[in-house]
Length: 470
Image 1 (cartoon, rainbow, N blue to C red):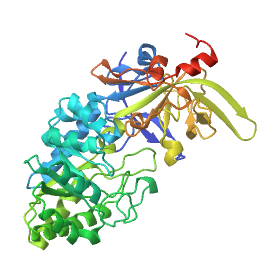
Image 2: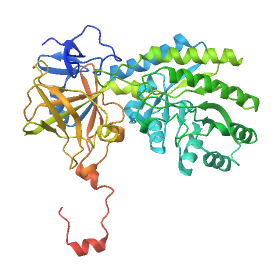
Image 3: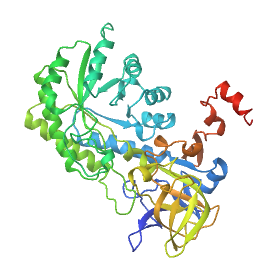
C-alpha cells in the first residue's frame, strides 16, 4: 500500500485540525512529525504504522520520530553558522525530555547539553556525551550535585550567592578553577504562562542585576572560580521576537561591565524559549528567524558597546523535540451528558501528560486508525485518573469513535515524559524511537513491580496486618 504525506491544517471553522495531503510539511508549521504519512486508514510515522506499534508495545505509548528531531538540531546549527560570524554552540535543554536515546541523538548532531539535576547529568554521561559541552543549571543545586559537576568538569551555571560561596569552599584545595557562568535576571517580560516566565525580576532564578557590581567584584577575588560566561533565559513557549532582541542588548551591556572587573567572560548564553505550534491559532517564528534575531541583536550591541563578539550559546528544548513526538492512546468508555457534552476516555491522561491540568495547555488529536473518516463529533477527551480535572483535550473534533480506537495526541515531545508521574499508582508509559520503518524501544513500560521497588513495609506493620498478597 502506498504511503502519502500527511500534514495538519485547520478546516473552515478554524477550530480543529483535519488531516490533508501535503507535499512539503514544515516542522514549524504543523504539529505532526516530518515523516507522518497516510497509509490507507492508518497514520504512519517514521515508516511505522501506529496501530502496529500499539499492538506491539501497548498503550499509552510515546512515539518519537528520529528524523524530525535530527532535522531540528540541524536547523539550529546551520542557522547559527549562517547568521553569526563568531563561534556558537547550540545546547539541548534536556529538561524537555532527558533519556539516554534523546541525549545520544542530539550529541551525535553536534549539540551540547543543558542539565538541571544530578540525574540529568548522570543520564547524559551514560549516553556518552562530552562534558566539555555540558552546562549544569538549577536554582538549588545540592552539595552532592556540585561535587559531581566539579568532578566531571562541566560548566556550572551559578544561580545565587549560596551556590557561589559553596563552590569556593568546595574547590578551595583542588587547584583547578571551576568553570562557571552566572545566571542573571534581565527584567524582561514576555507573553507566556506565568509558571514558565523566568526573565522578570520577580523570579526564583538568577542574580538580581542591581547586584552586578558586588557580584563581579567578589568573583574577581576568587581564584577558585573561572567565570567564562553570562546566562539569561526569559521563559518558554514564546512567539514574540522583540523580547529576545531586547535580551541581547542587556546581555552585551553585562558583558562589558564584567570586563571592567577583569573577568574573562567570553560566552553569552541567551537561553531558549522558542515556542511550537500546538493548535491552528499558534504562529511561532521559524527556527531560522529566531536565530537571526538573536545573532543580529548580539552583533549590533557589540558594535555599539565596542566589545568583541562572544561565543554565542542558545538552549532550545521544546522547539527541538516538541513536534517530534506523539502520544498514542487506546479509547475506552464513552459518556454523553444530554445537552451538555460527550466524554470519551483514554487509557492515560495527567500522569503521562500533566501540561493540560498544570498549564491549561491545549492539544489537538487524531484517530490513528480512522485517518480519512469525516470529523463528525465534538468530544471531551478525558483521562483515566480519579481527578475531575484529568482532561487531555477540552474540545476535540474527531470522527465517530468506538472502544479500541487509537487516539493520537500531537506535539507531546516536550514536558510529557519528563513531567510524568505515578499518580493513582499508574505505571509510566513506554517510548519508542521510529526511523525508516524500524521501531526501537527507548523507555520500557513500567510494571507493578517497578512501582513496588522502592516501597518498604516495616515488619511491625506486616505482623499487624497479616501477610500481604503475593
